Length: 74
Image: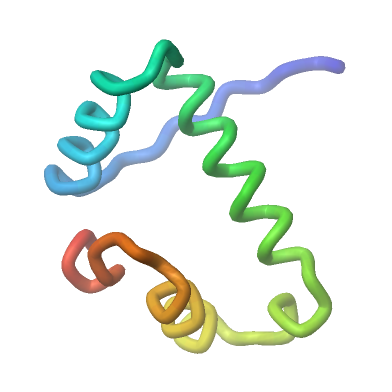
């Protein structure tokens, strides 16, 4: 498999949460972000989820998440 780089920006609260998680694991930042992306893609590929618009998707993720709401992190 040919690998490609992905670059993105995150809010300071997201960055702090990422660094906090890294302190409690033996993982790397790349592995943690890759795992999170894989989980999200698996979630988003479900037929009943892929038909949602962006606003419905954010509401659904917020409803299932134990973490801060999207609007608190964006």
